[in-house]
Image (cartoon, rainbow, N blue to C red; front, side, top):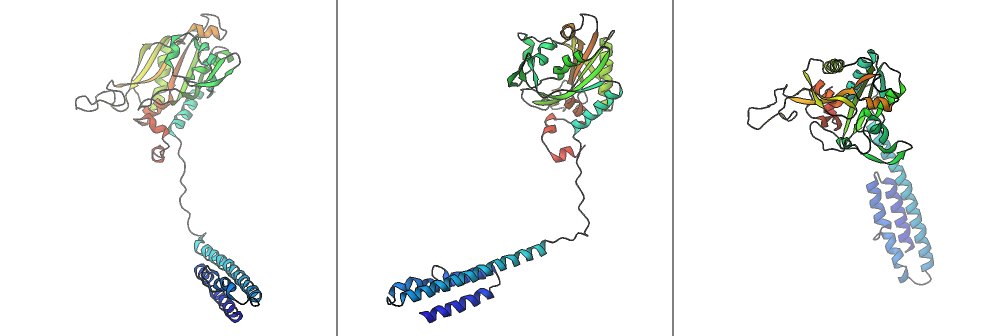
Length: 354
C-alpha cells in the first residue's frame, strides 16, 4: 500500500507540472483526489487493513494528499496569471491608431429657445427673472387676485405639496409663471419691464398639444400710458422673432383673474398652415389644431388694478400688461414639431435634428 502511495504521489505531481491549462489541471485533481480518485480509494480502504498498518498508511496518505493539493494550488495560480497575461496582450490597443470621432452633444430645442428669449428681451432692457419650482398659495393665487373661495382656482390643475410657508399658506408646484408677478411688482419701482422664465406643472392628460410639465415665459411691463395696442405689438414682435417668419396671430377676449381685459392669443397652425383640414377625406382633420387652423399660444391682458393694490401701489396710478407664453409651443412653431411630447422622450435622434 505504501508503494502504491509513492507511485500516486510521483504521477500526480508530474501531471500537475505538465498541465498547460486550467481544464487539464482540473482533470488531474479528479483523477487522484476526486471522489473516485486513486488516493481517495486508499483512504476509504483503511478500515480493511490490519490494525498495525492503519496508522502508518493513514499518515502517509494524508501527507501525499496535502502535497498533491499544495502542488495543484500553486500550478493553478501560475496558470491563472498566465491566462490573464495572454488576455492583456490580446486586448492591448495601438495608441497610434486614429481615435473615433467624438459624439458632440446637442442643445435641446427648448433650451435654445429659452436662450434666445433671454437674449432678445435682455437687449431690449428687460430684467430677467427665473421662477421657482416650488411656490406657495399666496404668491400663486391670492397675490394675483385669486382668493381662496374664487372659482377661477379650478382653471389650474395644481399639484399640491405637503407643508406650508409661514404667512403664505400651502406649498404647491407652480401651474403658471404668474406666481412671480407679485414679487416683480414689489421689488421694482415703475416704470420697468421684466420677464420671468421657468417650469410649470399641471395635473392634466397629455396629448399632441399638452404636457404635465411645461416651460413658460412671463412678461410684466408697467408704465403710465400703456394700452392693448402696446401689448399686441410686443407679442407680434416676440412671436415673429422666435419663429423666424411672420405668422398671423389673433386676440380672443378671455378671462384671467389677474388681467382686465384678458385675451387668449392664437397663432396659425404650424402643421396645416391655418387651413384646418389635413386631408380631403371626410372627417379627417389636422391633429394639432383639430381643424380650426389656429393653436392657442399664450394668455395676456392688462394687469388688474387689484394686483397693483396687493403689491402696495395706489389704485389707478399705474398701468401695465402681462403675458404668459408657453415656450414649448413657441419651440413647436419654430421647428415645425407636431407633438409636444417629443421634447421629453429623451430620443437621441430627435435631439440631433436641432
